[in-house]
Amino acid sequence: MSGAQQPLVLLVEDEPAQREVLAYNLAAEGYRVAQAQDGEEALQLVAEAAPDLIVLDWMMPRVSGLEVCRRLKTRPETRAIPIIMLSAKSEEVDRVRGLETGADDYVTKPYSVTELMARVRANLRRVRPASVGVVLSYGDIRLDGESHRVYRDNKMVKLGPTEFRLLATFMERPGRVWSREQLLDRVWGCEIYVETRTVDVHIGRLRRALSAAGGDDPLRTVRGAGYALG
Image 1 (tube, rainbow, N blue to C red):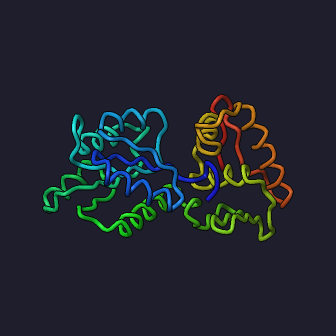
Image 2: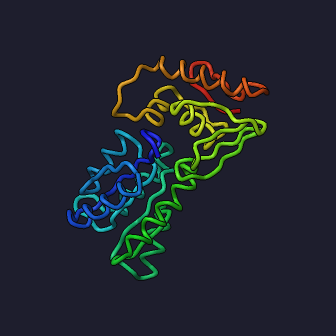
Image 3: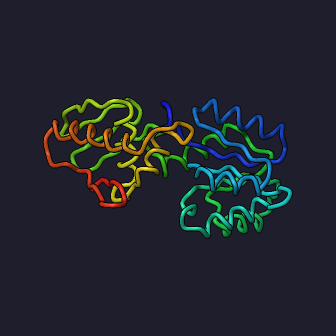
């Protein structure tokens, strides 16, 4: 995985030793990792830069993991972020409560780090398939996330790394309109300063590359809003 195409995982855990182990393993998997030591800090970080996935401890001071989950799942802008709840509570009633609050997955402590990483990959496959090597298709366009190759009508399309990440973003959510700011955050990364006009330049390059392989321009400019695929 390269650059800002790496999914951003927010790790929320109040025990420093556990947080360190998990952060190390998530980074070793190739993910960008943001860390919070309590629920309040977690909500603040999500407001600053929405992660692709959240690993969330249930028992925390100030704002519990359950309350963080409830708040994020009631907001339209954060509802789709997968949440894996970590808890020492192994009773079925607690698991049901966690899932009913909106958690997408529930892992009981003590857990196997290998199993947790597998759960992270499975949940990311749903929201960021290209970043975990899944092959995506849209019309006559095929994008292979593992080999970083793109084909249109079975002809290879030559794309630069930025154009590849742009196309992957569009193909993961066909029909969704992305603003220039959202594309900057997703493709370049929020820590890098790039002008919004740069997005237009790379969209132009992507359009030319796809059109060179034949067929209509699959990208749509939505006036005053941004760009969409289809």
